[in-house]
Amino acid sequence: MLRAAALVEKLGIPTASIVGSGFLKQAEVVAKGLGLPLAWGVYPGAPMVDSEEELRRKVDESLAPGLLRGLTEVNPVEIVRSAAEPEPMSVVFSGNLDEIEEHYYRQLWTDGLPIIPPTRRRVEAFLRYTERDPNDVIRVLPQESREATILSIAVNGVMAGCRPEYMPVLIAVVEAMADREFHIEHAGSTPGWEPLVIVSGPIIKALDFNYGQGVMRVGRQANTSIGRFVRLYLRNICGYRIPPGAGDKGSIGFTFNVALAEDEDTAREIGWPTYGMDQGFEPTDSIVTVRSVVAITPPTYSGGARAIDHVQQFADVMGATFRYWSHTGMKRGFWHPLVVVGPSIARVIAGEWSKNDVRRYLWENVKVTAERATHYARMTSTPTFSLERLVAEGVLPAEYAASSDPQRLIRVFIHEAMTGILIAGDPGRNQSRGYMGNHDQGVPVSKRVVLP
Image (cartoon, rainbow, N blue to C red; front, top):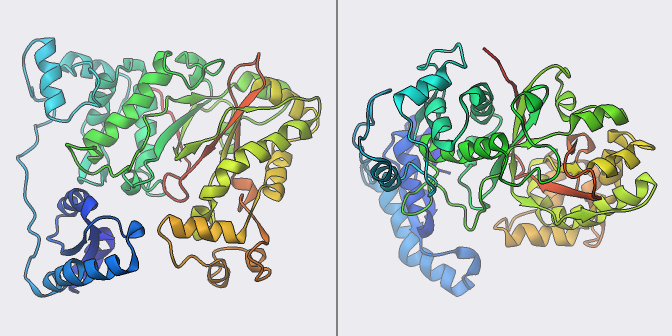
């Protein structure tokens, strides 16, 4: 909301935004990053749990007067400038390891875990794995309007425990998150979604990524440290920090995802295109895809010698998780579910079905009633949610308003082609899993890994 207000203010039109009291620190961070003295009125608490009487009282006594002041006073919220940040490659602290760890922790430069001190020697070792200038700027990133430079990638890569040879992957990861289609400005939203890095191509084996049993566990350095790097970069460059910091408003949230690498050997053996090929790349390309994950399904066990035995189980188990959040995709006309298929299960399915057959089955068979979708939307803070209006506006296909029956079934998977499918996990077990994205926040963005 404040970003929209900033655009209007630049046109010379005064604005005042509605801010919940729990979002005040984040509002200050956003306003500072935008460089504008924005105005707002404050609603105390959470309106979705207030009675109508309580809501009216808070609007009359707090919100409305605040909005009025914001529209009538000059520079109602001044921007407080912080001290200048350290110059690139400068020494920010000297001491023993314990003292360095404590200093970085107190400065909110860590994720709460010990870091590898980014000494000049270590940082320079990372920079040798790219031909780009350390001062190259990929983009100025929200919320704190800090430059995403090659140097900043190396520094945070060191801190995360990455190896220097991971540097080309780290650059591609930041390029993906910095892509405007990814919408990194929403990475601190209340659902608390986390980016997931998917690794494809020859770089998987070259850097020893795990793609088998325990693929999403910490333990393999490439998977783990690159996943940790993402969270550190969001904290240190974007400014997404939980209290005592600000900027990250994930209400509960969860921890970082380790990087996910595909079992491309199995994909080739069964005749399925790899995930990287699905994104339009060649099998010889090394790429990363970064996408949001807001929820993960239970482990989905399936058995049988027919494709339908397994894909029906996907529809039942994964559909139960996706149904609740599907209204967020309906509001925008798209979202990007991801199915991670165990190798043994993929072999059975591929004996009869292609990836597109799997996508079509899920699209046709995972459904939710219109009444439940509307109810879930309204509970999530969209009281005006209307399938009929979304159809009239061209956001959703006409079938979503085919009748006025609230018990009519509507599709959860809005566009069949947008369902991602990749193979990973334990080849000796019959388990798969679904990953749910956060609608247009963190849509999948792929970038090629450029080796020196």
